[in-house]
Image (tube, rainbow, N blue to C red; front, side, top):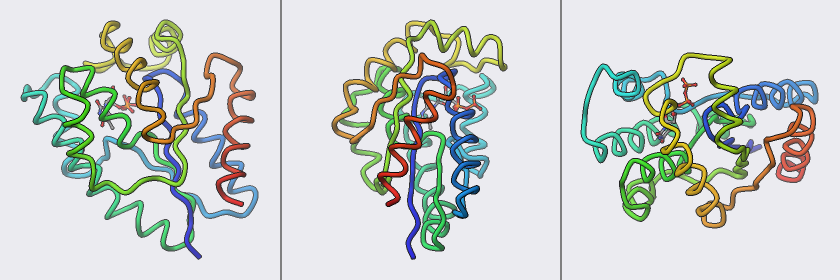
Length: 197
Ligand code: TYD
């Protein structure tokens, strides 16, 4: 039986990783096979991405976008597709909408970023955990190291705006992330139940 492919999107610090873990735990308790994965990946292309996110490598913004798109295709082929074909529920922390939102916030035309990502197959469900930029920045400061993109308030604002603008095109289900963890999780589970039944 074919599994499902679920993508969780949102600003850095929106609570994605906590929500992904809770969702996986719940699905496993129901007997589902689950694969948690993320972009950028830890693969060959993901390692180059890590270098420019941490400021060790400077490359043109368009080249960054091409690397994210390439990392995504490799991710789908090597990890997502085989797991879905073996009946698992794959939950990825970021996929195509991250590229549209972040790379367009860095100055690239939305249409071009969309175009270079056209070959990436669509998930069965995409959830956007929407949080005001200030909320996500406070959460980030308290929880982890900041990379190049995290630090930039103006960029994060553009990212949020673009996410909301493209939500229709990418059929994203928007959830208000500015609430207690349990309430956000309950809403995500409702969407997943609908998608998996
Ligand atoms: P993130 O999920 O925040 O990783 P970490 O938890 O290791 O910080 O992703 C790293 C950054 O990469 C984040 O700021 C968003 C950015 N990003 C893009 O700009 N484009 C993309 O296509 C993806 C997948 C991520």
